[in-house]
Image (cartoon, rainbow, N blue to C red; front, top):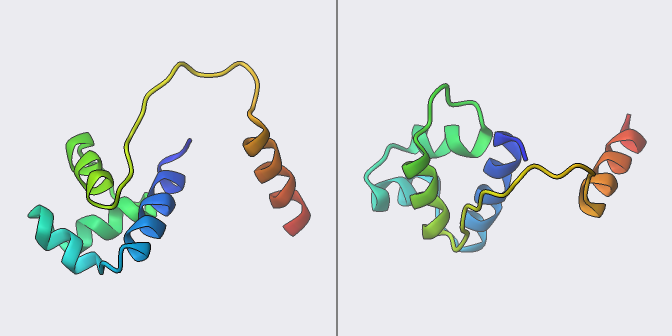
Length: 86
Protein backbone atom coordinates (compact mmCIF):
# COMPACT_ATOMS: atom_id res chain seq x y z
CA UNK A 1 0.00 0.00 0.00
CA UNK A 2 1.33 3.42 -0.94
CA UNK A 3 1.43 6.47 1.33
CA UNK A 4 -1.29 8.27 -0.62
CA UNK A 5 -3.58 5.24 -0.20
CA UNK A 6 -2.97 5.18 3.54
CA UNK A 7 -3.61 8.91 3.64
CA UNK A 8 -6.89 8.55 1.77
CA UNK A 9 -8.09 5.96 4.30
CA UNK A 10 -7.10 8.26 7.17
CA UNK A 11 -8.90 11.19 5.54
CA UNK A 12 -12.08 9.18 5.03
CA UNK A 13 -12.04 7.94 8.63
CA UNK A 14 -11.37 11.46 9.94
CA UNK A 15 -14.30 12.86 7.99
CA UNK A 16 -16.53 10.01 9.19
CA UNK A 17 -15.63 11.03 12.76
CA UNK A 18 -16.66 14.61 11.94
CA UNK A 19 -13.18 15.99 12.56
CA UNK A 20 -11.53 18.75 10.58
CA UNK A 21 -7.82 18.58 9.82
CA UNK A 22 -7.30 21.45 12.21
CA UNK A 23 -9.23 19.77 15.04
CA UNK A 24 -7.37 16.49 14.56
CA UNK A 25 -4.03 18.27 14.50
CA UNK A 26 -4.84 20.32 17.58
CA UNK A 27 -5.88 17.20 19.50
CA UNK A 28 -2.58 15.50 18.59
CA UNK A 29 -0.30 18.52 18.90
CA UNK A 30 0.48 18.77 15.20
CA UNK A 31 -0.32 21.37 12.59
CA UNK A 32 -3.19 21.22 10.11
CA UNK A 33 -0.53 21.19 7.38
CA UNK A 34 1.02 18.03 8.85
CA UNK A 35 -2.38 16.29 8.94
CA UNK A 36 -2.98 17.40 5.34
CA UNK A 37 0.44 16.15 4.27
CA UNK A 38 -0.18 12.74 5.83
CA UNK A 39 -3.59 12.49 4.16
CA UNK A 40 -2.28 13.42 0.71
CA UNK A 41 0.96 11.46 1.00
CA UNK A 42 2.80 14.59 -0.13
CA UNK A 43 4.68 15.37 3.07
CA UNK A 44 8.40 14.91 2.51
CA UNK A 45 9.18 13.24 5.83
CA UNK A 46 6.44 12.01 8.12
CA UNK A 47 7.14 10.22 11.34
CA UNK A 48 5.63 6.81 11.83
CA UNK A 49 4.58 7.82 15.34
CA UNK A 50 2.55 10.78 14.01
CA UNK A 51 0.84 8.57 11.44
CA UNK A 52 0.03 5.98 14.10
CA UNK A 53 -1.36 8.66 16.43
CA UNK A 54 -3.58 10.03 13.67
CA UNK A 55 -4.77 6.50 12.80
CA UNK A 56 -5.65 5.82 16.43
CA UNK A 57 -7.57 9.10 16.70
CA UNK A 58 -9.81 8.18 13.76
CA UNK A 59 -10.24 4.53 14.71
CA UNK A 60 -7.69 2.90 12.42
CA UNK A 61 -4.61 0.87 13.16
CA UNK A 62 -1.43 0.61 11.16
CA UNK A 63 -0.25 -2.96 10.49
CA UNK A 64 2.90 -4.29 8.89
CA UNK A 65 2.94 -7.65 7.16
CA UNK A 66 5.21 -9.54 4.80
CA UNK A 67 4.94 -8.52 1.17
CA UNK A 68 2.60 -10.84 -0.70
CA UNK A 69 3.78 -12.66 -3.78
CA UNK A 70 0.42 -12.23 -5.51
CA UNK A 71 -2.00 -9.28 -5.45
CA UNK A 72 -5.14 -9.50 -3.33
CA UNK A 73 -8.61 -9.50 -4.87
CA UNK A 74 -9.06 -5.92 -3.66
CA UNK A 75 -5.84 -4.85 -5.39
CA UNK A 76 -6.90 -6.55 -8.63
CA UNK A 77 -10.30 -4.86 -8.50
CA UNK A 78 -8.69 -1.48 -7.88
CA UNK A 79 -6.31 -2.00 -10.78
CA UNK A 80 -9.19 -3.05 -13.05
CA UNK A 81 -11.23 -0.01 -12.01
CA UNK A 82 -8.27 2.31 -12.73
CA UNK A 83 -7.85 0.79 -16.20
CA UNK A 84 -11.53 1.35 -16.98
CA UNK A 85 -11.25 5.03 -16.01
CA UNK A 86 -8.32 5.62 -18.41
